[in-house]
Every structure is written in C-alpha cells, then in structure tokens.
Picture (cartoon, rainbow over the protein chains, first blue to last red):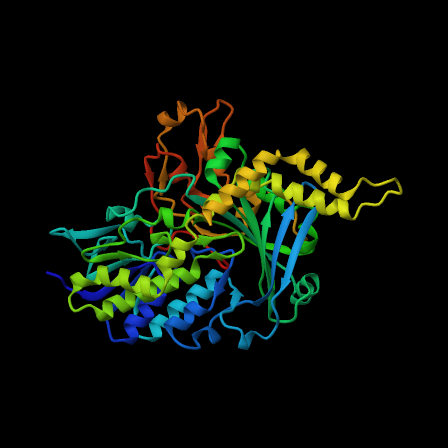
Length: 427
Length: 95
C-alpha cells in the first residue's frame, strides 16, 4: 500500500528545489522537499553572488526579503603574475533600486535556509537531515524515493540534488562527470569588520564588490574569485581537477599561496578565517548538459542538470537553478496528465530562455579553458602594463618595440593568433 | 589572529563536523591503490584527506570530508562513494 503520496517530491532544498517547491505549494500542490543537511544550505557553497531577476520569477519583490549580503556595485577583473597584480574596476553605479537586473553577494547557509523557509510558509513540507538513497521505479516509471527504511511516493520526483546528483545518475540520464567538465571550488570565508571592507574596496555600506581573478594558480587551469559580504570576504579558487592531476599540484597548497599573494593578502589582512569549504562546479556549460532532462515521473533541475554558465566575467549558477525550478513548477501546473510534464518542462525552459542562453555561451569553456589563460596571458598583461609605469632614468625603448619584445618573451605570435581565432570561433 | 597560511588540518578545525563513527561514506579499494601510479587523490582532495605513509601506501580518513565529490570523479577504483547519512558530515555555517 502507498501510505502517503505527494504530487511532487523534490530531492534537495537548494535554490532550484526551493524555487520549485515555493510555486507548487503556493498553487496548492502537495510538495515534499527532502534535504540531507540538518538545515537547508548547510551542505552548499557559492563563490558567490545571486542575480535577483531569478527570484522575481518566483514572486515579485521576494528578493527584498532575502538574506543577501551586499549589492554588487563594482565589477572587477584581476590578473596576477608572481608578484604583481592588475585590476580592472568597473563602477556600475549605486542606484540599485532603479537598476534591474541587479546582483547581490550571498552566503549559501543563510540564503538557502531562508529560501526553504519561504517555501515552507507557502505550504511545502520539508524533511531535513534525510539522505535519499534511491529512486523507486515501477513499470519503467519513477514513482518515489527510498530514504533510510522509508518509502515515499509521488506523481513526479524532481532531482534538485546538485552537481553530484546521484538521482540523475540512477535515473540513467546523467553520465559521471569527467575531470575536464568540472572545477573544484575551494573557499575561505574571512571575517573582517564592515568599515574595513568598505574602505579597502571603496564601497559604501550595503555595497559590494565581485572580482574574477586570473593567474596566481601556479599555471593550473582555473581562476579565483573574491566577493565582499556584510562582515566577511569570500575568497576562493576554482581549479580543473584534470589539470591538477596532470601537473601533480595540490589544490589546498595552491589556494594557500593564492591567498598569500602580495596583491591579494592586503585585502584580507587582519581578518580571521571562519570557514574552509569546497564544492564542485559544472564548468563545461551546455555541452555537458544531458541530452535528456526527464523521463516518466522524473526530471532534473539546477546543478543536477548542469545549468551553469561561466564566461569569466559572468558566473551564473544560482540564478539558472532558480529559473529551472520555476520552469519545472510551471510544467507541473500546466500538465493535463503527469506524463506530459517532461515535455512541458523543456518548453518552459525554452520560454524562460535558459536553453538559448546556455547555447549562446556553449563555446565559452573553449576560451576560459585555453591553457595560456591561467598564467601566460595574466603574466603578459602585467608586464605590459608595468612597463608603462617604469622609469629608471635611462633611455627607454620605443613603446611599440618594447611591447612586441614583452609579447615575444611570453608567447609566440602564432600562438596568440591561434588563441584569438579559437576564441573568435567559440563566440 | 590575522589570516595566514594554514594547513588543511587547521582549516578543517574551523568547520563543523558530525562524524558518523559507524559508517564510512567513502571506501577505498586498497589493492587498487597499491597498483595505482597516478594517485590523483593526493592532489585533488581540497581537504587533503588522502595521504601517503612511509611505505608509499594511501592513508585515508573520511572524517574531514567536505563532500565535494572530486575523488569520485578522479578515481574510478573507489569501492564506495556516497554522501554521509542524513545529519552527518560537514555543516557549513556560511557556505
């Protein structure tokens, strides 16, 4: 006997799961969201930031209640050589209320707990501290989940269980990742008083900085990021496990050296590290999204589906997770019969432009993954810029000749042209 | 104390863990480890939980696992990789 049956069971109370649960519960569906952490968010990590347009899709003005850190008003790109650093700082303006879409730095433990709580307020049932072991399949259809000794049933099971989604693998829809498709994110959260953060980054109260960093990773493919929170700084690197293994370099060691880099350390000096975390990030965009995202009684959202875009300046995962959760909820609400949900989900993903956006950026991992991106080009940029400021009283070289000389020292002209062509094609 | 260069043991000490003493969620195949030349586990684990002893054998302690999943992707010889049972493992307070 099926003692308890829900309209929808959602595995994982991250942003994708909570967005979906919120809408479904609001529209009167019975929803069970199962979370393995003691509280929603306690297993999750971000760089990171949230683009708030996504929360608007869930409920208008919901972002105003969200536990957010600082509104991003400075977008920065930093390139590191061994000892020097070059930072491009774009001041995006302070009038955030009039500027939609906007983004805020966030921390996932408080944010996810808040979001799951909002879904619960709408009537979703949340079972925390429970790991789902397996899917229950009957006549080729997914009909529920097993957790511990318990079995729970639903018309639809939604895998919102993140990048390591065992649900998607069990359903036979997702192959195991390989070491080139993901990045390992490692991060320290460093406590610092808000005034110091504001002075160091030239921002007002509630204003924040998002910085993408190239170089400083000992030539291992990947990059770094820095986000200012209210009274902490999130400083991390995301590195290719395949590249680490090939170069036999430890990610923990690289991160510590990165943190102590002479252009980074003054930003976090006098701070106190309060947490060390790690998480995988889908890095290969659309080309690693499974061809099929649903089967009868089952579909995948968020990281479980591989919905992440990284162009180097825009790193989008949480917003896409929420959008896909919204798409799944809309599909359930529109479906005349449970069997229609999968196709409707794809239609909603299209209408919300998630798929076309991911397809547009499908080639970008070719650019961010160029081998010379992690040290040769950051070194080159630093030396070129540095030469513009160098005065020692001797007769300087003509600028065009000195630039060409610096270029040739780091990379062959042919290699630059090949990379430029590869980049152009990838766009 | 100002932020400084730290080893993984110290850093993991900052995190909140509830260790499931009864059940290891990651289980190695020591015979496969013995003949593995590459040993990517030694460098890709952010928690530095995979170590070599004097005899060149892999030592592994699941207690400080950050549950990232990288070892499962990089090592195809694991006997078992799953998340810790509900309520166990790491609990991020910031994330």
